[in-house]
Length: 159
Picture 1 (spheres, helix red, strand yellow):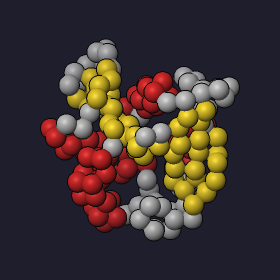
Picture 2 (cartoon, one colour):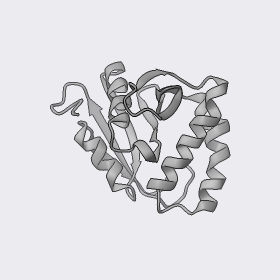
Picture 3 (cartoon, helix red, strand yellow):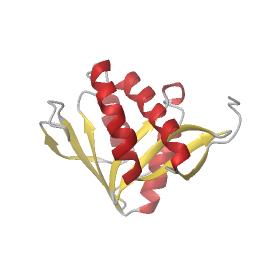
Picture 4 (cartoon, one colour):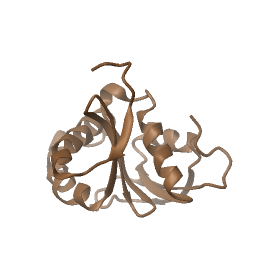
């Protein structure tokens, strides 16, 4: 991949994107969700590919036609933000989240507490804790931190 080529954002989730989005999701989850076993990731993958991705408003970051990451929105809820492991901490996630912050005056999301680096990422971009859930959407005992962002809050859209 040419590292000098610009990262562009575009709408995603046309049928031909689904497999690549699923691959980015899996790559990111394996690199960051150490609290999930490979069997658990294997069980989640078809749900992500067949149910979750098709119902979300997806925006992708790509370079030279290769998807580097994506954000999935359900109205003002950030349902997913995943970046390929090889480009983590290079601004791809910030660019995607910044795009979403430009679309809505308020955003909400849930982040796994076992993934503290993600929580810090959101806090640095103006999100604040707004509650907790003891289980994830599938009823698994993975605590979630609920967070919200308001365009009028100081610190929004930090680099």
